[in-house]
Image (cartoon, rainbow over all chains, first blue to last red; front, side, top):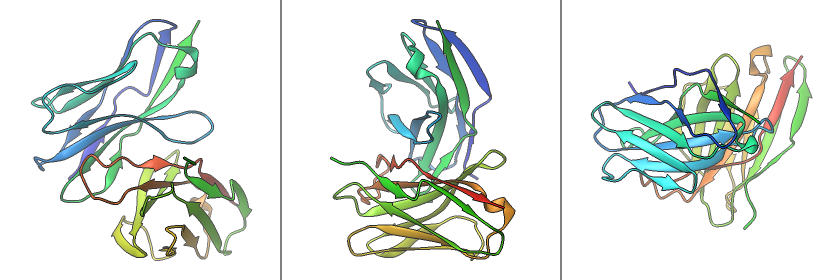
Length: 114
Length: 115
């Protein structure tokens, strides 16, 4: 069964520091995609970054990068130079080719303090 | 390009009533997916519509239904509301190409409270 695990319910980071949010997944499908979304208190889910299972390089999008370790089935999000506006819930999600459904983890609440 | 819009943003209903939520996708997107988000169950996939047909569905009872119109706008209906249906309902649109890298873009959600 498809499963996404985010073991950190909450994280604190000081402004301008880097932070890593953990995500592990479980799938038997060799073809899958991994996504990270940010959800501020307003509720809207904002797409941050994507990594495909066959991608050789780690994905990067501005201050966001994805530390993809396929053998360990982990896809950690790294936010560099944290900003106060990064305070939000962060969700890891996965889509398998065979199910074509986007399945989400339970999320990590990140709080950035000055 | 305008983003995904959802109406209404907030809704209060009583048990036993029914409710219809609306979602307008990003222009050019043909797929609309619906999700329910609750503190207890997290984000759960309800169903996906593509070209006016339900293409995929999650594990929700038949009280939850949806449809999609020719302009790709979608509606979700919940009949015989229960207290447990109180949630944030999120709609997401995508191109519908069914490529593994296809990104879903979410609307602001509709917060439904059932009393």
